[in-house]
Structures are given as C-alpha cells and as structure tokens.
Length: 150
Image (cartoon, rainbow, N blue to C red; front, side, top):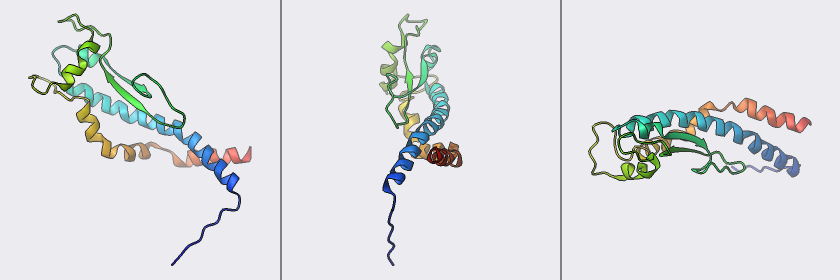
C-alpha cells in the first residue's frame, strides 16, 4: 500500500509552520520553566546542608547559564553558586559549589554530591512528556489559524 501526498500551496504551508514554531516556542518555554521549578526544588533537597548558603544560591533562569536565549529554542538552566556568602567560611558559594558537587569522597550528613547532575539525569527521559502535558495545543493551533486570517 502506498500513499501520495502533494502540497499545492507550499508557501502557505511554510508560513503556517513558521507561525506554529513562533507561537509554540513561548508556550514550550513556559512549560519548561514550570517543570524546571519542580526540579530546582529537588536539587535544593539534595544540596549538602552544612549551611543553607548553597541551597540559597540556587536559581532558575531562562536560556543558558549566562541567560542567553536563542530564537525558537526553549531552554532553562538551574544554577547553584553565586555571590551568596557562606557564614562559616565567608566564601561566596560560586567559589565552591562545583567542588561540592563533584567531590564523591566527601561525607555529607544531609545532601549529596552530584546534587544537580543526578536530578537532571533522572528527569531527562520524562521531561518532554511532562512539557507536552502542559501545552495547550488547541490554543497554539488556534493562533496559527488566526495569523492565516490576518
């Protein structure tokens, strides 16, 4: 059995797909940010708790670690380590966050090494489905139809 598909008005279809991507990216970004808020809370639970400084230094931002975004790309970054001062050491958390994350030999009464990596590895296989559940595809598709009418 074979099917043949032909598109008569290729420019119109290309326009619709371009509009769909433009309209979908903000919706995907919003859904991604909501899901990453959940994951940031899990990261905070896993951060070693010698003090609360490292947990307090966690942030969720749109884009990459420098806050840069790209057109038609949804991205979010959880950052741990900033200018928050550890009250015991008087060090900014950005000076030791990576070391605490990577040191598998350190003993932590509460929390663990790889506090960020472990969360993201666990959630990676499920994130696209979680984002998809948050999307209102009818609303996104409706915005494509409205742009066709304009």
